[in-house]
Length: 214
Image (cartoon, rainbow, N blue to C red; front, side, top):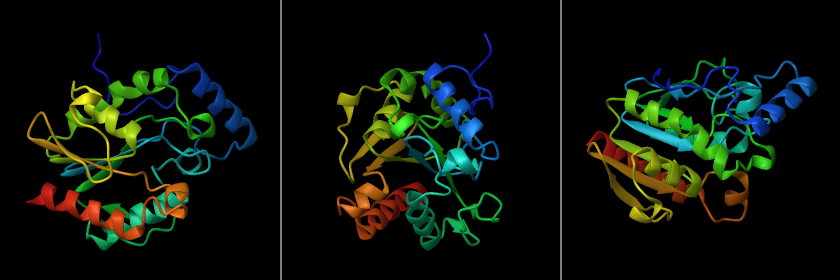
């Protein structure tokens, strides 16, 4: 049996509902990426950021995680402020923006309808996250954005959700001398409702960076 690659194939057919949604988007917007969004960043990353899934008009359109939606403005802006990125983020995969010591991926690689993957889809896509984690030999901290990413990271390390409860700013030990740091997702909804403020997000990102590079 072949080992699972760290990135889903461009024509991944594992989740029928997500494939149907992808094909529908391709019919409506044939110039969009419309596929499993690959991870983006430094292959020698010490910090891996795990989101939920591509947004329809974000990574599903552009092909780069968190690129083209509001969450990306906050995430990439914070990475630049912390010295983990170079260049100018223009919400365009061809903007030349690069990450230093960090990588971004998603628990689910294809855009789900209404931004809500099913539990079965999350589980089906998890082997790609597990493979991505195993390929990043230098990662010391995994920053999970949201409870689904948090649980997926735990399960990718053969841990149970009860082993480390999700909360904003929560910290837990992972196998392989890694640390899991969790944050509310940097979505427009969370920031507009003030569940997550810019200061809160910058603080948790700064702590993740400090642990990763200490």
